[in-house]
Length: 73
Image (cartoon, rainbow, N blue to C red; front, top):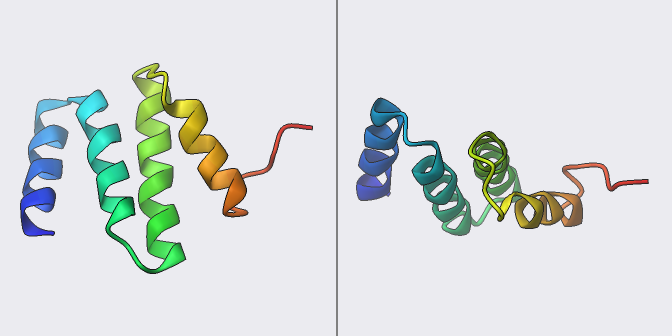
């Protein structure tokens, strides 16, 4: 995860919110543990919302499916 970690730090430094959403999703995909996976997915989701990315809804649904977000009523 060293290369991904470096890319995350660079995206943070550059303020590249769209890249952060993508990179946090990649970090989530590399996790075996659901707690770690949901941590990274939550970050990806928040950055996707901030950047108004079309994938935000998909990320939210993943979190709902994991029981980490409340479904719409």
